[in-house]
Image 1: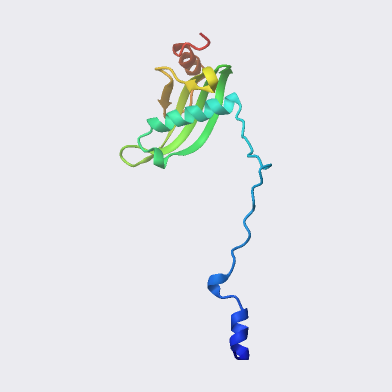
Image 2: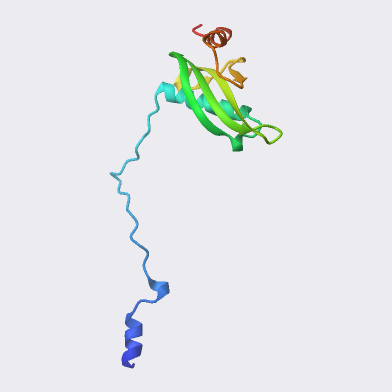
Length: 137
């Protein structure tokens, strides 16, 4: 074997290079559990329900979401989305959704749970929305 062929044999080839060491997960490693508050769960549920109502949910961009009234287990969420309508035009819509926490942190909305409007909501409309959804009953 010549000197140059021995050097080539000692050098690692491109195919035999090792990938960087991967972190090992030991049995003592535990996953971090994210615990959502009831307010976060209610908001996330409402956003999911509202997205289903949109004509083009893939184009939706959340502008704002906030709880405007809360009396656990009841939550009234106001959300604003920019999304395309059925003609492809981007419009901004305001939504109200009332959700009520049930067993095992499951949320549900009533028949009249979602309202849509092109502008904001007055306090009178917020109260009417809660009333027709049997808020607190």
